[in-house]
Length: 150
Image 1 (tube, rainbow, N blue to C red):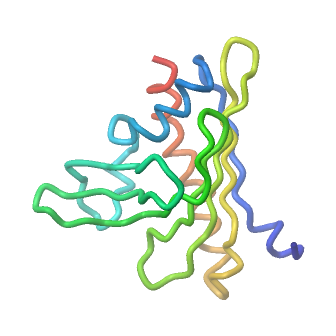
Image 2 (cartoon, rainbow, N blue to C red):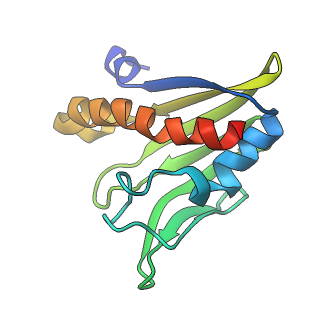
């Protein structure tokens, strides 16, 4: 992996007060309960439903009340309760990236490690988009921590 590719990896880690099984289930099956759709909604409109299909080849998508579907990703690894990975293609017309999330037991809780890579594929927009996602994942993970720890 090139130095540029290494520099353009978003890495986040949070600890939640629950088992790895519960954290994995919250992250995937309960997406609708914690994702901050008010600020991070593909298509700009908060969805009526968000779906994370639980298998390799499954889709991650949202559906608005008017029936408009926005596909976010395709599942590339499904290893409950320890790991899930997706081909992230939420931005139409742009190269996809890779999102991997690991769920590691730690004490009485679980450390959730997120790695979002592949930004070098965005060429001239790589650094700016990487920076946006680097701060964006902080906003997205905050309600996840609350939902998983509840």
